[in-house]
Image (tube, rainbow, N blue to C red; front, side, top):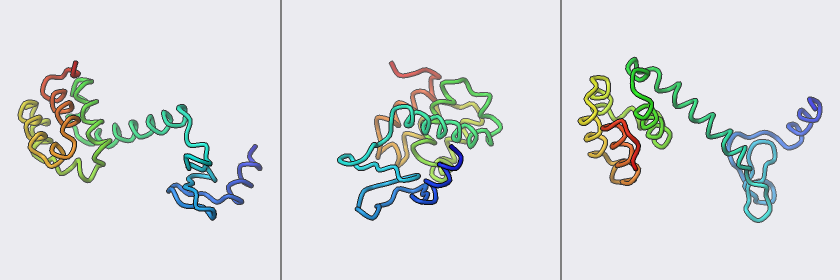
Length: 140
């Protein structure tokens, strides 16, 4: 299998970014065609594998905040969801929210989230995450 993998990586090329192959099909990885008409796309197992990796990355990025691990699970998950959507550079722009979270002032942190451009762009998600931050509960 090792030789086959090496050969296919050499023959197909390797790209961590989606690109158009020589026939114009969206492709990623080692020749994985994602085109809805001609490709395989991703299986549920592959999608969940990528998602788990991204969730783990978000947890690692959030663990730099000394107070993060002291949060209850639901508030941690709210921040993971927020970071997942925004990416770290944009997430770090929520300076007031992060300050309030560090101080355990969850209502103020949630209110700051709702005053953001993010809340205007994705209001339902922002409301859900802000509710989780404020209450420590999932939306029912």
